[in-house]
Length: 445
Image (cartoon, rainbow, N blue to C red):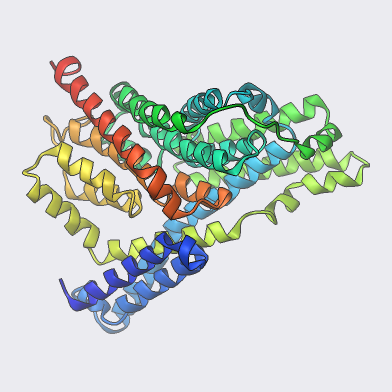
């Protein structure tokens, strides 16, 4: 490993440590992430030829520019998807679209609410995706729980349930979508083999976390409900079905058109924007302007967006210098080709760095075989889908769902690591044991 590579890793892990110590340094994590991103790529430019052999001069500079723009394009699609989804959910919520979901969740018992939130998040994340589901559930959570200490526990459960629910669905997580589109897994194969391990990985943490919840909930006064009557019941239902139905439609749009998912989100946002403009254009109340899409866009948490940009682009630098691929090869060597150890370790690593480049590296590193563990729906690919999805819950910045919830609820890295990480790890291992039992005694006796 060259000194330049070591320097890049030092910058990355130093920035990572500062993010982890945000509660002590009092420095916003977005600022650190942006500095980490620029620092890694600046060091890369000291000697880009070391990572792009055979190129020099203008050709090398063009290659570097193309690489950065390529990574920025991939990151940008995620950011625009996030901003679009956040806006859609906010519009539906502010116009009373999620009231019936909130009423379904409402209960006076803290532990009952834990299970209702976990179950609904798990189901919705498989139908929509874990990122969108996390946004929806956190916004609903604010209307149900007043005490911050309790709300942090519920928010952590949302992260766990969202990632577990997305792991067994071909459209529930970016990594499963990648594996599905790459032909490593089939839709029915991943559902039937991973749904039970995914449930276990969610139920075990819920059983542990509920012990810290006792007593009854204090009712929350929802002032926003006073403005819901601006729209008729029919108009609110139209906004709900258009918003939520549109989110469900996004994977279909991608499958049919082969366009990136963020374009489907933009289509839904545009349609929802048009419909709400028509609805509110017919109203005479001045308060109606407060809930138009143009006002919702100004309420997007740009700090979270910038943090996401910095993290993903810093990780892309590690991918560009080949560190992630080499790490995967090393894991394969030291494990003696034990796929449970390799994928299990990848799941743990995915809680530290983004799981998308990790899975992408594995997809390019290992070929699809006609039979055995590396075949379509083989043990390796199934475990990779499970571990990369569920493993991201171990740290709050280990998944898109975690990053979003971290920003929306201002959860500190240290609190999550101290209170939640070990609980997720227990559920993670329990799900892997469940998968091993299924593959050993039921699916492949």
